Length: 210
Image 1: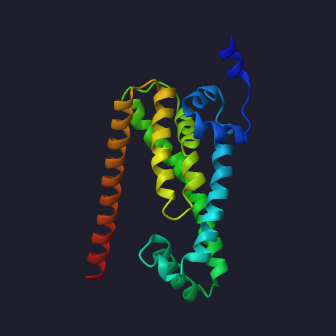
Image 2: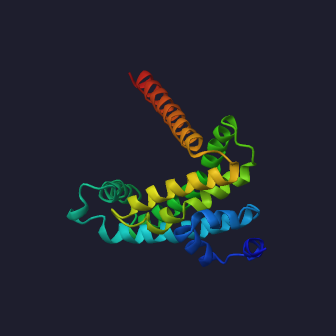
Image 3: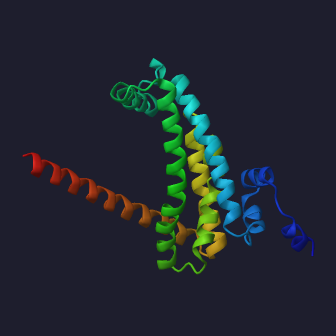
């Protein structure tokens, strides 16, 4: 009875953040019956905050020599070229970067979630698409909280990878080994498809220009 009453108490936004950081298994169980609206709103809210903070970090540090060998600096050179071409200032290019990160995060949730769900079903997962979205949205909590921080962000990525495994295991009732296989195979297949598309584009480009 205590366990059932515990599960019926709705978690607040910050309660979910705390739960997925400190007690992810129990928190995944508590939100199991939520419809897709709640995890999507949660994910988008954290994504907006994470993207905005990432943009601010980029704006402050990207031109520093200290970051010359890291992605922030390399990205700054790309945006610096855009600034010259489109006559934008640094603030405008940073705003564009933030918008791109927000949109790409949302696209990744739904399109990446659909791709992952396809492989989950092929490997025996029984639940519906929205449960996969829920596992990804809530599982990305550490990544969205820490991903905007240089260096430290990697810990958030790894932590989120573990939480997504827990979420898929919990919602699709699959063992850890099978979930890992799903993630590995889906990742390899996506890499192969993207590589093939890039190869075809370059082949077409050189054939037309050669």
